[in-house]
Image 1 (cartoon, rainbow, N blue to C red):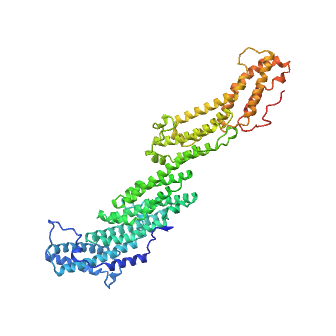
Image 2: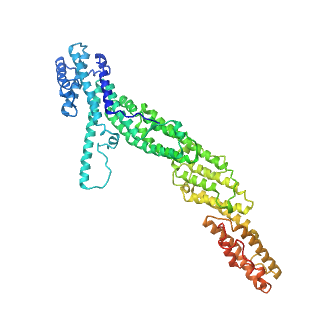
Image 3: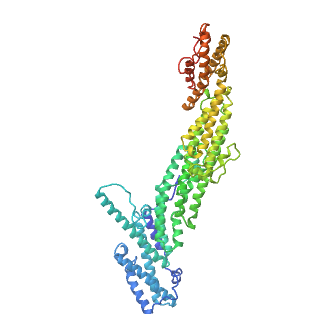
Length: 623
């Protein structure tokens, strides 16, 4: 596993800088001023005497701070000492530059021009050294976090935490010192950069800046654990390891964008504010490691399309999408466009992978070939698996809304036309999310219709459908799916449950109901009454024995079914029972009348729990 470039040590950096300085050749007269702007024709030209005086004044302070001088100034810092003298130094360099322009415009080849050239090179050598020293000395203070939290007025944004008055005082002093040190360092760096750039030494200035600040960025990425992965490495990871890596990446990318890159952008823009053409490529060079950071999602998106991997992919998409506006602001130049394009490419890759996983998930539902009968018409494992999966998808509705925004809904299905209309909810989400989630549920319901046909008993098929659609409905009503699918969807599918349940009652208990005479029908003869009781006993025993092992997991649906059966059966039986029991009491009543109306209520109450609650599943013997 290859990490991004390890930051250079201070010693190594100093060595490289020394080599850089030693390789700097004395510039020729023409090259020194090739990048200098020509003074305006209206500007006042200095007289020869004034020019000479300017050069002499500049010589005094520049030679004093000659970096190759044996004096103490060779090892001391100009900007760390007397700040007035530092300003005088910069002012003298500016005056020297104007004097050299005057000499050049007069086509002079005097010794003064040669001296001026040497003084300028000496001054630039000093400023290069000062520039590096400030960058190196304030490396910890000029960390991206400190820079990124500076407010527009230059203050540090503090966290609002309670503490003692002394703690506040100490913290306030510390913050004040940090603000001052950062402000001074940034001001000095900008002043030096402005001076060097205007003097035609922008390359030297930028090279020093990149040398130090790139090491800061590289070190930051290294500490965040940003690695340069190969596709083969990620593909070999198991799900747990990959999810762990994704979580680490999401934490790292937030810090990298909000602190590391943001802080470096602010510093670079400040130091090189004088030149747009300098600061943009400079920042691009410093933040090259960002490309490795934003390539990671693309590699993850190419992993095997397993259904369970969709959730870490959506978290990855959400994290990257949330940061995209900040990335656009930070990497807003042509030289950093590859970073922005990589973020867009990563989002597109993740979106394609998520859509592919959902497509594969649909195929898995449609191709489920399990022939296992669910005993008692209970909840099918496929129902539980799919509804749980879809309800989890609903928690990422914002991500799916973005992904499906340019993906047309599946029109070649039996999905009602109403699902393709704009949602009536207040969520403000694109209809595509609701359509796709409703379609996934529809695929499941179609599969359940086919699985219901496996039952030989048609009444049990309808009980199976009622149970499973009710399970889907419960999941929708207790999750975010309720908001996404809307009240109309819930109402329509609640009606389906009622229809399935009603059909079950009619098919399972129709024979029992029809064995009794209609209420308010004329009394039967003793023989007719005996035959009617016998038909009822046989029909009820058969229905009860068969259905006592059937199950309705949902309590509300279970109670509604019991009430429906009892309302249809018990009043009719009570009327028949009360009308004919006196007639048959003298004719072996107990041989023909096995159930009282209350007995029927007790037996009905035992239904739909999967097993008989007490005793045998067979009704009692004749009284």
